[in-house]
Length: 197
Image 1: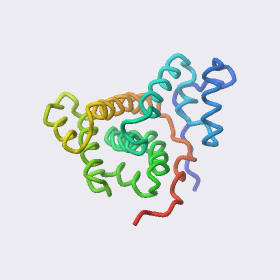
Image 2 (image 1 turned 90 degrees about the horizontal axis):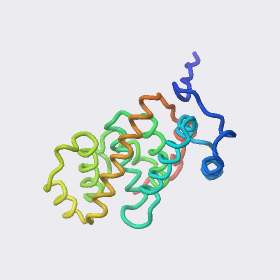
Image 3 (image 1 turned 30 degrees about the vertical axis):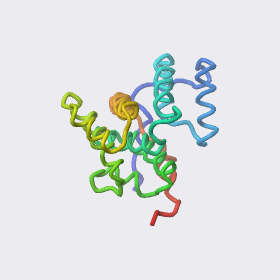
Image 4 (image 1 turned 135 degrees about the vertical axis):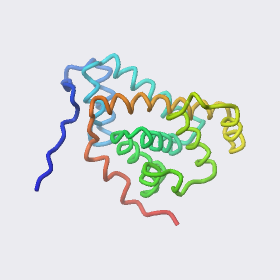
């Protein structure tokens, strides 16, 4: 039996050739690096100004020098996207987490139940805060920041955890609202590396 394939999005897809030159160049660069165009860009390209703002804020959070490691940033995305039931972001950022952490197991552990994942105390503190921001931001208080400070995070890094969580909360909702399907390629990326210890 062949399973029916869901469409990339419930909204119309833009023709990438008709995109403004700056966006076309950015998407081309991403596809050159990864070997494919992530479906989220195909699905958002019909609104170029929003896609540009989305990509700019994404890069400001996820590619900035210093602060959290790139693997920590992806771990936040996977844990909070799991809490928000966002299949696209769990699958796509799970692939990136496996690559950045050099660990084929960690993304699945974090997505399903980060409490039982193979985490350091620092990562546990980070994800406890991120998931609280994702689900109950109105309850965040001084004790939450004190726990992160005790785990070794600077105030700048605490902001970063919260901002990444908030940005991907928006992303999770857009992707779920639009039923954006993860690219098949994401499912296998980073799984062939040897497991740690």
